[in-house]
Image (cartoon, rainbow, N blue to C red; front, top):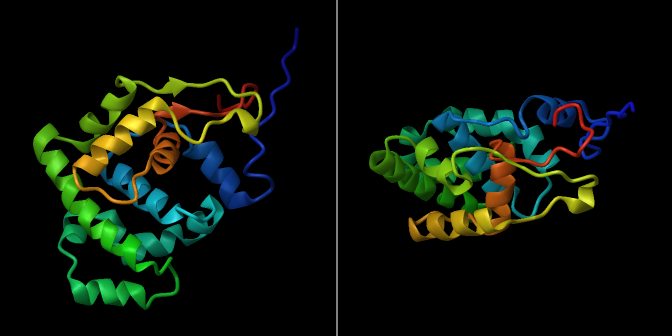
Amino acid sequence: MLIELTDCSWPAEDALMRAYHDNEWGVPLHDDRKLFEFMVLDAFQAGLSWRTILYKRENFRRLFDNFDVVRIALYDEAKIQTLMQDASIIRNQAKIRATVGNAKAFLAIQAEYGTFDRYIWQFTGGKPLDNHPTCNAEIPAKSPESDAMSKDLLKRGFKFVGSTICYAFMQAAGMVNDHLDGCRFK
């Protein structure tokens, strides 16, 4: 019996979204800088579409020092105000300030665990959770694992890390594989 492969439908015909789907989404990630990047971008996504964030990602990289967590943890009020004036990113003061605070909390986790990677992957037992959705409606917005991650991150001082944001982060970081059954990237 031949199984017809059909890719996930959410990237549609958008070339940038398709490249993200094909090369990043659901791929297990263990690089602390990249994990921090996804934490920041998923926090900025709150209330917005991923497409909006993806199209501004290069601007975020440029303005946030390529997501260098040490540099971001040192941002002062002048830098925050400079970021607030740049229309090439999402100019949400609470999210910008949260990014600086989250960088400090991220560094504390690195100091405690050696790497953020070692800390964050504990929420899935160190391996990707492979879901088997057959349509977009079967992809959850959160899970018991994202609930636990959110609770612990909040306890450690992170902001914009509700369970739904944590679940999106888990998908981006490949901690969860929500490619549809039949997707060639499953």
